[in-house]
Each structure stands twice: as C-alpha cells, then as structure tokens.
Length: 422
Ligand code: HAM
Image (tube, rainbow, N blue to C red; front, side):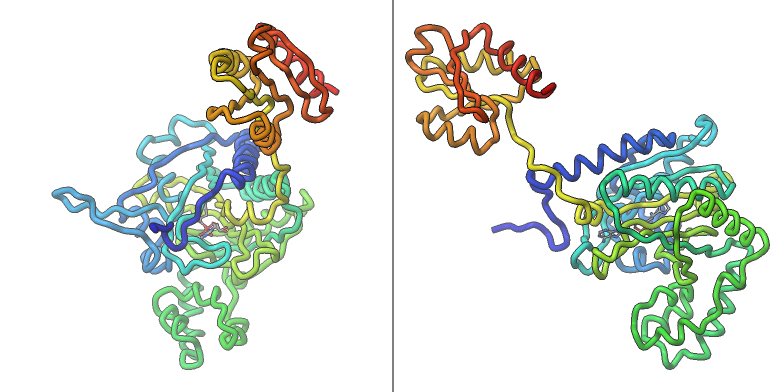
C-alpha cells in the first residue's frame, strides 16, 4: 500500500471545518486592518531563499526541498519553506510599493521544511502570513502584534503568551555579534557541538540553544538590549510604550533571535504551553533590509506567520455539522426521475440535498438520512408516485405530511426558514 510521505498529513473531511473557520477568520479580520490577499507560487528559484533567509540558517542549510528544473540552464528550484521571501519578490517584481498607498498583504498556504517530524512539526505545513511594507514607525509593529493577538482570539484561542525582543539593525547588530562571538569563544570547549559551530557561523543562533548543559553559559552572555544603538533603543521603547497603552501584556526575552536572518529591530513570538515542545504558534518581526537585499528599493517591512496545524490543534472543536437539510428516498425506480428534477430545484433554492443513488430499501435509506443529519426525508414510493406527492418526514419531531411534488421545494424552504427564525 502506498502511504503518505513522512511529515505530511491528510486533512480529512471531518477535520476541514476547523480549517475553514480559521481561514474565514483570517479573511474577515485582516480586511478590517486593511490587508489584501496575495498568492505567490509554491516554488521559487533557490537563490531567493538562500539570499532572503540566510545561508547559515537551519532552513537554508539543511531543510529545503531543492531540485534542478528540467531545463538547459539547470535552474535550481525550491519548495517555499516560508512565505516572506516570495512575497517580497512579488512586491519588487510588480512595483507594488509604487501603486499601493498602504502596502499590506496576507497569504495562506502550504510551506515545506525537511525537519524531524514530531507533534506540531511537519514537513508540509500551512501558514497564515501577514506582511506590511514601507512603514517605519513603531505603531505598525504594535498594530501587527495586535492583529496577531486579535486573530488568535477570533479563532477561539484563549491561552497564549507574547514574547518580545529587539535584535538591533545593520548599524548596531554587527558589533554585538562580534562581542557575542568573543564571549562564546571564551567558553567554546564547554558548549555543545552545534553551538561551537554556531559561534563561528551565526553566534546569535546560540541564544536559541535548548541543550541543558549550555544554559548557564548562555545566560551569562552579553545581552543585545545593552548593545542597541540609540535609534533602535528609541524604536523599541516606543513599541513597548504603545503596547502598554493598548494594555497588551508581553514578556521580554533577549534570547528571542528567531530562525531566519532577515530580522531587524522588533521580533516577537506567541507561544502556547498546550503545544508541548513545539510551542510557537506564530512568530515574526521587522525586516528593514530585506527588500533592498533582494534587489528592491530601501523599503522597510514587518510581518508574522502562524502555523495553521498548531492553531487548529489548540482551538475548541466546532459543532459536528449536519451534512444535509433534505434527503430524498426513492423507493421505486420509476420515481427516480422526480428525484432528479426536484433535487435541482431544491439546491437552487439553497437547500442542501442528498439522494441515495443506489435506491436501497426504505429502512437503509432512513438510516443513512439519520447518519447524515438530514432534517427532512422526502419519500416517494408506489402510492406517492401515483398521487404525485412526497411523504415528508420531519426527523426531529417524527411527524410526516404529504406534499405535492410541485410544492416540495417551497415547502422545505419555508419550513427551514421558520426553523432558523425560531
Ligand atoms: P517561522 O518562525 O519560521 O517564521 O514560522 C512561523 C510559524 O510557522 C511557527 O511559529 C510555527 O507555528 C509554524 N511552523 C514553522 N515550521 C513548522 C513546521 N515544520 N511544522 C508546523 N508548523 C511550523 C517564518 O516563517 C517567517 N516567515 C515569519 C515572518 C513573516 N516574519 C516576518 N514576516
């Protein structure tokens, strides 16, 4: 038997209701904040991610699904591991910043990372991604954080923590990274193998290390908050003041450096203890140099992405929806033409209709209608066919009435309207 690929999962019809709810909530809420949807391709040129996310990140170094295209030039393609780089490419390619007076976009869709699969971590997963361009003031940082929290609330998530940091900018971070590297070199022999390597390649990533033996050393390292330049310090202070104004609680963490290299200044994550080891529901931050680094103008950017699998795991399950309003039970083959005609009338009237195409016996059809949650079953047997009527059974009251064939659509529609209103 051929099975699904490790790290991928099917979203089955019984689960899809929750996905629809979080997707609907995104469309509704984001438009109130002025965001419009953008859809970019699932694969891009590999160098977009290598340059955008950073060659020394785990994502680019070991997690990308990369393959040569079947062309003469041997273009290297990669399944997108995240949405930001592709969106930035689209913004530059279509000059969106020249025509859109408020460049705010969001995207939903699958991402691919070859990580070790575990609960909440998949190789194909889905993100809700939000990005705003050309806005430098701290108030957009705060607005985007507020949007993220509003979204979680709209989806029914009540327990979560906001974690906040500033990672400086191109002016102050390089000096901090050097300070950090020197401090790390002093402890080099006592660090885990990964951190020894990161000390040279990407010292900031050491702050993300979870190895218990390394923690005491990491806590003693110089903190970025003590090494921000005046502009970054002021920017961060204003972000924090405005979060206070809006009464948004947060926790500061100087170790929140995130796994992608493009961040500048504000970084944030929302975590939930209910998720276990993979506790990050969403993460994001500012990336003021990325548009320029990818060949565009000097345009600031900020955004976040949320893991949809993780969100769906956290929210309360919705009610199990009934599958149909009316079920047509045809008991004699000659009545089937009536069913074919009337089912279309009913559907045009907005009624959800199912018919048993196999036209089994009444008992088996009633059982099926019950399982499908039908509110009404319209039965046509020999007698009904002779009189041109349907016997309509109300499944909740167990009462039944005879309704003429021409009136059936109107009858059911009216009953449903009365019930919805009541
Ligand atoms: P990220 O932190 O790599 O950021 O991913 C964001 C979210 O995607 C995570 O918080 C998590 O919920 C989910 N996620 C990541 N990897 C997996 C996985 N293997 N399985 C399941 N869920 C996963 C970014 O992707 C940035 N592009 C966010 C951003 C947008 N920053 C600025 N704009």
